[in-house]
Length: 447
Image (cartoon, rainbow, N blue to C red; front, side):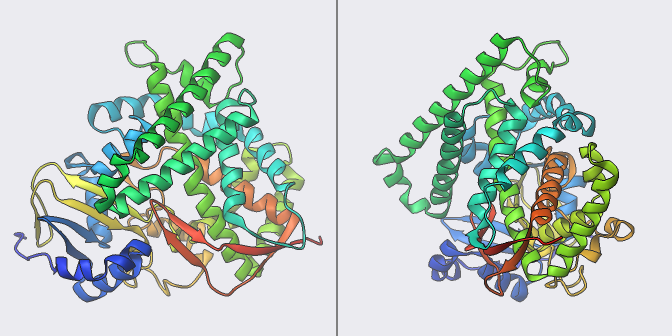
């Protein structure tokens, strides 16, 4: 069918009128526009700039999977984020991305991850020992610490000191907060530059890079193999037999810090809040996990693989609250889909959270119902369920994240029952979808 329909537009005036509310939380504004204009609309943001917002799953699948070669990431990742992280997988494009993806992919294969499972489980249990019964806590900071330590231990085993870990985590989180300010307040760009605020954060990034360089040197000097991710990255070879430069290696490690800890911490925080509101699913997870433990106590990969109920709960939570709630792309050449024509250089923003709650795709989309992801039903959703993205650029660490979350949820519930402190869940949409005031109460579980 010939592309002929004009994309509905939201005016610059409307955008500016709601600028303050968009700064605090853009989701209600976008949802209102989707409901009014349909699954795809154009938002004019002034000075001739616009973005195409879409919650049409078929269009997202077309862009991310079927015609992905005609689409690149936006400058938000390839430029704005890259200045803090370098040119790792998350920020790279073109041939450089393709080369790095091919090199690093084997490190995240299930057979290699199996070597890390005992490290991941031990780190999770160590962190859970910090929790005290009969206490109310905001679980986001707790899971942020847990997820960061899991990434660090999986990367470096015990070669990183506690001080180094604390500095790396602090700088990673500070730079993400700074990037949010830059993107949400572009009119203050002059201020951030003139007063050296960006330079200060870039200086802190250099401090992180120095720490990582020292860790790499210590590993090389030790001449010991820990079979962790650092070993895998150090021994990885390009087609010509060469290895990654230290600069590229550090770029990839910085990406793993960001992609491997924040989204996981967010997801776990949402999962625990939902479980607090739905205690019957806590009981189901515990009962299943205890049964598996009796049969496979030493085989951590088997523990994860057999924990189907925990997996379903996590998948349903990521449907309702996907940490990566928007995916951006820019088309390299003109393209068409359905009745719409897109000029090259168009900025696309796919609302994953809207796709995951689309009433035409999901029955009772606002309800928490892990039954949707029973093994015999899960495949039904593959064309409109994108918690880790889709296509060749799907998150390389999706298995790592799922294994970690299954273990974290299962081991947590083995020790505690979780109770709500309120009957609603608050969100804070930044670079990722974060929970806000994620306060729950832990009580010692009585088996």
